[in-house]
Image (cartoon, rainbow, N blue to C red; front, side):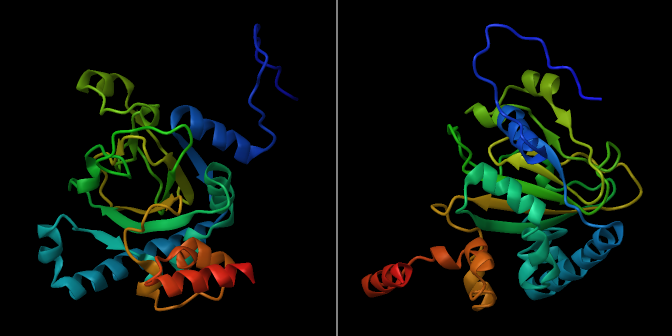
Length: 273
């Protein structure tokens, strides 16, 4: 049975909500957050979860060990996972997620970063402090310029440190007062296999993990191409996926800074066909 329309008067313009993605778009624009089903099966989610810690362990070895990582605030953190395991490239290019990001940012956007955080029981993480995923920025824009999507490799609950947000703060330039935060803060619980999608300018942070098990997540930040990537993915990937039209654009191959005037003109010539 269809729901009755919500009563209103004096209204001439109504935001259309044709399908489910439109509803997610409305939530993102109004309050700055939404929860999106990835469409992955439970066994696929479990497989991804099991791939996170081995990559973090490998990156710790590359940098000199867990203590060296902890000294720079990188404990239990993995970066650019897709360069180590192509399963995470498929996650970044998830069709449901791509559909939503395209509606928010348009057809041209780039993956700026893909990071994994493992929130251990009763152990803080630098992502627990409130922040924007475009840090140190105190401006708002009429349209979103970046979207982040946190993949829940575990169920996110009140007990294991689910993400906290300050609704509407993506439209408010300064960091809100402590009193406002205590009154407005919202904890987003979400099932395993979903994406917590945020306007990257919303203030958010991880909660405290009071459960007996670690909580795994993989965050993605998609940006308009005028912003640089956190890590030069085309260089790190060494040309892999450059011949795939969709992946080359997502990974930033189409937006690399030319090394010379000649390179710039050659790239322009290539676009003309």
